[in-house]
Image (cartoon, rainbow, N blue to C red; front, side, top):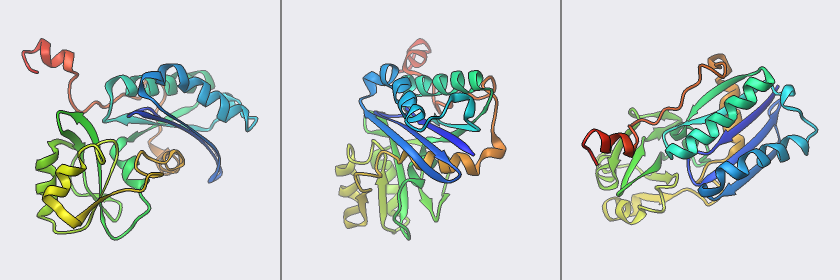
Length: 226
């Protein structure tokens, strides 16, 4: 089983290749502005360095949201193009599920937070691998207050973790911390592991959709919002 994983939901683009549970290669590019330029060379590098052709792939996993509207479109479109050309299927992976699974620490609440701007975050909380609620958009302050009611140690991860950590700490104090540097942006190989577990949910290139979780800023402005 050869699985390619692609994530462009946030500033750090990630690619990984997994064969029968063994990681063959990973690639990272930490600059959202270059996702459209760097992603295909990253995929090429990981495949070619392992003598793998796109047609050899059995499955492709791609993060489908929430996250950067532009980033998600780039990643999903690329994954769909490869899947179509290789005649293989895709598995869409929720960003928060991916980020939570990338944290190795146990016996704590894992809270993935994806920056939604203006101190707002897409968020959820996970205990023993299971989400405690549905993905929602909250202010960082509201999220911290919600977590404080649970009275448990919280590990924040994702691109909203360090960015809004002072807000979390003001409310949660010593109950909170951020994930380690090598885990906070998500681990590419974990995306492949999740994809393998979800292979029964695989879709073809025409079926898979991006899940933005809320309309784009342009659409909000068109409808009189901000």
